[in-house]
Length: 341
Image (cartoon, rainbow, N blue to C red; front, side, top):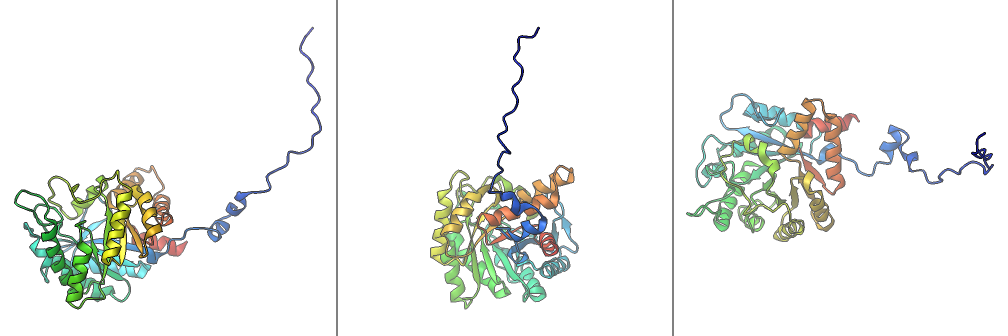
């Protein structure tokens, strides 16, 4: 005979009350989720980086950036036309010259690859989007650094500012609407602004790559511009460990007259982006860089991720963190997805 007591009859305590606050109500359908979305990305917030290769007669694929190319003059016109038709806000032009030297002489050649690309793009889509040009020497120097070197191999900050000033006037003369100061030299915004104003280009806007970190995510870009860099850029780009320094750099650039400030890379520095966005009186942009692009493309090619979902989520996260605009290699494609959503 069992010695275990019989189970008691359940007490009739009534139904367990459900929650009165149900956040899931606002997730019940796609239409509902779209209606209550707190962050929205618009095609006009996207900027497409593009590479113009001197002497190219057809597009040259970039092995480490699947789907991206170094453009010929004709393919560049086609690419920016597609971007404009998709509603993209702007394009950022990078030049890949045939010849380089110690001071980046061809960066200030009015007939050089970058100035020519600016003129071509302005003529093609200059009324439809903002034509931007990278203002830096790294693509044009045979040592791959962003400035002029001293005899002992260090980057000479103040001598580099003189080269930036000359380059700014050449690109503004070519018709660039905005110049992206990506070299991370101290005082570059003030020096460039003074040169532009003196040359009658008061309306040419300046985007300061204000918080540009010395990042391992730039690797594929080096192939895209055929960089000859030996060593690294840690003496002028920011240390990945430093958060407050990013905000300090941005505020210095604002004080020097930057029209827009930027955080680069985007994904690993969302905390810095948020800090800058909360403090900045001018628009704040972020650059989703080559390494971020290539990792997604590689994973998607293996079927490991939902490519469209990841791209959309990443850019939304960048905007959610505070970016008013995002430079992304998916700009034209993403703009199409947003338009059709």
